[in-house]
Image (cartoon, rainbow, N blue to C red; front, side, top):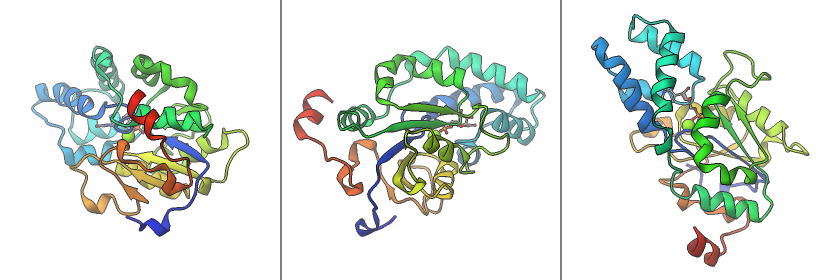
Length: 240
Ligand SMILES: O=c1[nH]cc([C@@H]2O[C@H](COP(=O)(O)O)[C@@H](O)[C@H]2O)c(=O)[nH]1
Ligand SMILES: [Mg+2]
C-alpha cells in the first residue's frame, strides 16, 4: 500500500460493481457451488480469486473446462442467470457505498460504474438501488459494444472506456477506481489509475500489491486524502 504522501488528487471516480458496490460475491459463490455440486465438483476460493471480475462468458468457458462440466458455457450461463435472478431482491449495497456516492454527488464529483457484468444482469441486480442512479454519470457493462472480446479485466479497457465517457474526459491519472478483485486491481493499474482496493479478507496480500490504498470497507474511505471534499460529519451520520 502507498504511504499517505503517495496519494494524488483526483477529479473523477469509477466504481466496480460486484463485490465493491453490490454485495453479490458470496451469493455468486453459493450459486456456482449449487450448480457444480451435482457433478461432484466444488468452486474453491482459490478458483474464485482467478474468476472474479472476468466477463461472464469468459468465466463460464473457463469454469466449464476447468471443472470438466458436461455443459456448454452458454448452458451453464443460462442456469447461473436463472438462479441469480431468483436472489436479486436480497442484493444489498456494501457498507459506506451510499454515503460516499451521495456525498460526492452533493459536491458534483463525476462518478461512473465499470462492471464486467452484462447490462441485463446489472440492470436487474441494481434495481433495488435505482435511487442512487442519478448520482452516476454513466455505467459501462462488460457487453458494451465498444469493448473488444477478450479484453475484460485484468485488461485496462473497461476503465479507459469509462473515463472517456465523462464530459469532458479526464486523463486516466485523474480517475480513482474502487475495486474488490485482483483482476480489477490489475485493470485499474494498467489503465494508469489509482486504485482503492476493498478486498474480501481471503484475498492474499500478494494479490493486493499495487493498490494505492487497501481498506476493509468503503465506510473507511477518507476523500480528502485524494483531494476530494471531506465528509461533512452531520450529513454522514444523520442521513447515512
Ligand atoms: O465468483 C465469481 N465472481 C464474479 C465473477 C465474474 O465477475 C463479474 C463481476 O465483475 P465486476 O466485479 O467487475 O462487476 C461477474 O459478472 C462474473 O462475470 C465470476 O466469474 N465468478
Ligand atoms: Mg468486483
